[in-house]
Amino acid sequence: MLNQQQPATYGSLPPTQTYTYNPTSQQDGFNAVPMSPAGPTGPYHVPPQYHQQQYQLPQQPPPQYYNHYAYNNTGSTIPPNAPPVMSSEPSPNHYGSDFSMKGNSGGYQSGADNNFGVVGGDSNGQYGASEQFVDYTGGQKFPDANGWRDKGFFISWIVHLAVVIGLLIAGIAQHAASEDNSSNAPSGAHQQTDDKVITTQITSSVVAHFVLVVALCSATALLIGWAWLIVVQKFAKFLIKIGIAFSLVLFFGLAGLAFVSGAFFYGIIMALFGGLMLYLYYSWRKRIKFATKMLILAGHLTEQYPATIRFAFLAMILQFCWLALWAATVTFVNEFSPFLANVFTLYLVFSLYWTSQVIKNVVHVTTSGTVATWYFMSGTGMPANPTIKSFKRATTTSLGSICFGSLIIAILRTLRFLADCLRNPENTDSMVVLLLGCLCSCILGFIESLLEYFNSYAFAQVAIYGKPYVQAAKDTWALVHSHGMEAVVNDNLVGNVLGMICVVSGVVVGIVGIVLGVVYHDQLGGDYWVLLFIAGFIVGFVVVMTVTEVVESAVVTVFVCFAEDPEALRANAPHVHKKLDKAYRHGLYTA
Image (cartoon, rainbow, N blue to C red):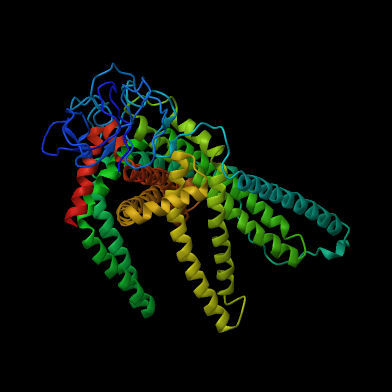
């Protein structure tokens, strides 16, 4: 039975009874006929999507329940004192239609109709202009920062960082002590030879011009990344098809190279993967329309809320700083005995993975929170600075959950690092150990990929509802059971496009590096075309990947929201809902 939270004035209603609807009318209102006792009790205004479903009227509602209410389609119990979410005048026997969308007048459509028109507008919506949105399906969206989830994992992460700092300080002290001992060595210990020493004089001018080239490559990559946001909105379907072709060419191209070089085993594997992907893409061809709409919408949202990209670039800078600190710590721990150096290095490898995952997932949760805020509140008045508010939740109340999920990936990557060490021929002569290392590395890599994919959806739950990680994981598992295949297909099609964009951007920026190398040939003191191409490719790839990861987070979040609560989108952006719903049904019923 479906419990409704859309009561009308109750003076004219009979006691608690179960009703069914007449599905023949094409109007918003339907004649509600009681199932027991028999006999009509008058027309009741009910939403179209509840045709032939049942609802139960509360027996003694509070007098203020003449307002519009959100409805609950989960079958869960409605709190008896649930407050109204939108004030209105009493209307006898009137039930709020379609989240009080004011009929077909399009009262919640806001912004210009630019494809999706995702610009938030009218603040007189159903949910009110409050930042906190509450539904009565058991979930609370965008909770206030009044309680930390998974606090123990946040504390553990902070303690582990303190240990890293301690190792760095201890390593520096050990290095200083070693320097003092070496300074007391006999002067004869340092001998000079007459061998010719070849040195390369690197002047400050050369360094300055090299930095200038890298800076210009970075600026070019930023422009390219922003241009891609516009391109994916205009040519999303074309890019998805090109992405499919790019993936197939990559697989079959690698297979051809393997066969030419004599690596027949790898060639067969790549050819099999290429054939499998060709079959899957043919099977998924009807779902391209939905992936296209999702990609367009994600591009719109990323462009509309550029603060998400700025936070992503700040995180990238923080990643570089963390990598520099980590590299310095690894260097100095080698001053200890070999056994301690190996133990500390393993710990630092684990620390590298954990902290990098935390920084990356903070960006993901920030973007997810921003997109979800648009999804549930764009028609009712967006709060000021939604990205900053999402970042605040990601770095406070939800940071423990982020640390928890990131810890799992860090442990798997550390175990995979050990397996890679086992399969290194320099570390062992045993063929059994080498095979065991290869097997463990493959298995752990597969599990790691699955969990990273799973985490992207779990962290979306964390961003939207502020759930602890375990609860988010359980709900994500339920989502996988109900919409898992759609998510895999959608992410695969979109992921091909984003990966292709990163590679193409890297090549373009690499070519820009070569051109700048020609322009500044004299200032650089030679031909460094290969070096500048590699540097440009890395810069272009990393910078554009930072932008595409924000787009990917937006795609994941919209999918989670649309799968769990499509009616919220219908209320806040009915024109967007219509396009997504039509595309989804097209892929579902014609695939």
